[in-house]
Length: 563
Image 1 (cartoon, rainbow, N blue to C red):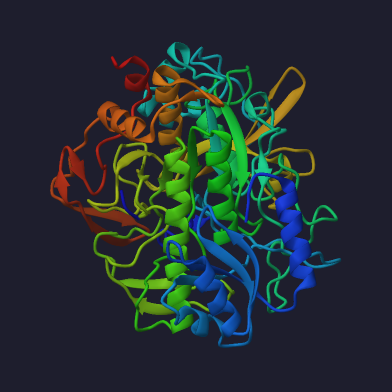
Image 2: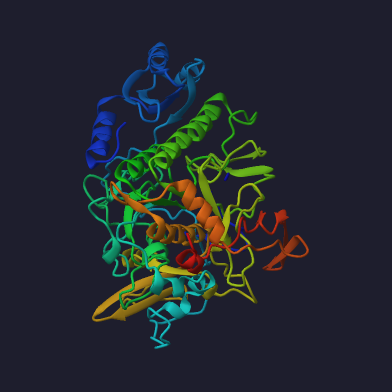
């Protein structure tokens, strides 16, 4: 299980991407206050086992001040002592990585609307699809009103599994993402507001004064736990567990609970500290499985010794690799199954060559670097993580999906608007969308009607809800997460927070119930998109290959397999 996704432009001509202790809101408040008191930037300084004291001394020698120690994950939070602080601290043998702490936002009275940035769902380009109106119920009897549009659920047998094993309320699924709209009619019944947390503070502008998240919606710049100003996390959550309630769609496991564990900015960036906090919190409260449809910014590929990078940049990448692995291990050791999107770069992750996307933050800092397989995409290539490749409705690997015989563990529907003649929104994945996000993006009109076929409105019993079609491995991963939730519902044993099932067992069962799928013939598969031929090569055998991993996840098999 190695290399995420989320958020790369698949092909520029093909799709545009749409898009300390932990556990309490007080933790984030304390960090914000601390940042206001101490001048200068803050850093996360990761030390070797037993190296806390020596690391603190290294910080002080470099002119810095230690603010806090996270003994769980082995790092100090410190203020820097000048422009060369990172290099000076990193020279000590006790230090394994140093990263800026970019997670703390600040209040600002003005500014423009938030920028739209990627988090893993490749949204169809505006204007590609014809106009559409509100959905008219078909009365097909296939389940929820919009079930006819859910080709993805039929592909993995979730439409049948829903009736047999909808999932247990004792199973907690953590969505580590941009947030979850807990008031959405097709999420609210399964949304656990009490356990949900937001580890992100909005940052209206970046260090250069450019718009980042946009104006804060609340005075604290910390959104409530039931809001999602991006829409990505809401889509993911609905694929996992939209309930069977007579409106909209049904998720893979419509009976389990969703816990929002937000780590993504409104702008779509996912920085290190919120990711560490989110994973630690998931382990502490007994979450059963988390979905991570993103990669940790600002590096798409994290290289610890790339000659194109400064020593400061190398130390930051080492911190991301080390810190995330420690957080992932912490969560997994406490029973959390870890599932990640594989990535949307159309890249063979077993043989990466060029990274043109890093560092993605601050804006304008990207450069072209030569990379190799020693450089890791985190968390998808981190140890203990199940990474998911994306499929189109024909069953082929989606054109945008990353691949690799060591990296792709399983595959699942992620959508592919180009999987067929021309481009069609309905080849993408339909999921819940926050109304206010669609209004801000201009996707619905003043009367609340959709402006294009990429948005669907469904109404029942005087309540209306919105849905949008998105492509991406971010959309594939939650299908696998939902199947994992079914397996935990069936085979889990009572524990501290509900049902528990060892992550290694969940992984084995997920692979056992997946439907093996061989590489295409010939292995050099040629995609045709907007007049371009794009060739991608599949390595491996039917049991495990770079396009489909151990196979396509299967909810029906998960619901019926014998122990």
